[in-house]
Amino acid sequence: MTPVEKRIPEFPPLLAAVSRLDAGPAPNPDYANHPLYGEAFPKPGFRVRLRALTRLIPWIVFVAAKACVFGDRIPPVPGQDTGIPGGIAARAGVALRHLPFLSSGVFSQLRRSARALAANESALSQRLREDGIAAGFLPQTQLQALEDATRRPLAELHERLHSRSHPQFEERQKWLDPALYADLYGLVQSVLEDCGALDAASAYLGRKAAVVRALVQMNDARDAKSPGYDGGPATTRGMHLDTTYGIVKCLIYLSEVGPAQGPFCYVLGSHRLKLRNFEGLVRRAVDRAGLCRMDAGTRRLFSALPAVLRKKGSFGGDLLPGSGLAEQLLHAEYRWTSRDGNFAVFDTVGIHRGATVLEGYRLALFAIVG
Image (cartoon, rainbow, N blue to C red; front, side, top):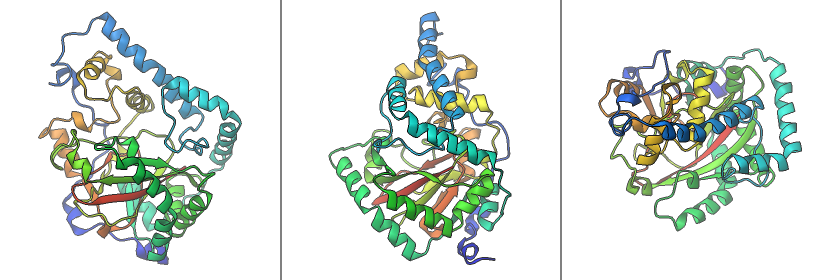
């Protein structure tokens, strides 16, 4: 056993009583008979159905095209430290302006995909394969180096959030431009290599994995004061599937995270759910199109979609509290605090969420590995 493997803890004893999901279909509420959807609106007419399809279909095409060119596995476009805002036209415009850069990323991924990698299993990769998430501890020196290196982007993020009473989820994140933060990207790559996370990701993905994107995220107690706060952990609000393609994520806590600081939550075994390619594409397109929002107008449009298209990536808020499906997911949910480790690697296709911060704050660094 290597020194890295010795630092990887077993999950705490309390998880012995927590179930793991068996492989089966991905969760999908019965929207036709749901009190907020099918039961809340009259039978949709032709115009409403057409509006719903017109809004969704372009995003299905966009998501399919992005998957074909390894869009989740190539570095971010330079200068887009908050992601690419706007709709499909704005994204297409950015892609055209940076076509040589994006083409280089696509060809790089084609070369890496052509070279199969023999699995080099470790304790971390075995845990990742079994549960969909694996946690461990970084040495304090490396953690301190990451805290120092992220001080500037976190300060910029804090300044952005300072004047907002109820920040949106996207506002709590800052994507890191590799051109501006080259040293930080190099540090993250080195730290994840040393702790075994990149080897575990490589074994899991079947190819040599590397850090392709990174972001910092800041959450605080304003989460619990927001209009959408659900009142506690007994509901499934916030549970979602990323439905990204060919990546895993590494998460590093940059602050102490206990139960009240909004720990990252993962439904163990949910990475094995049978999420077919078309279904994953639809779920992601629905979220991209904004059809996952909970206002009455959006819910009516979503209800007007054909049944095969009524699927969300962000489905947690639609599960009825106390239902069998909600209880099953909550019983298999692992709430990862600092006592279990300060870094984790996880499959984004599994069901996960960030819990609401009730006290203090949570600072985190995410690295997309592909």
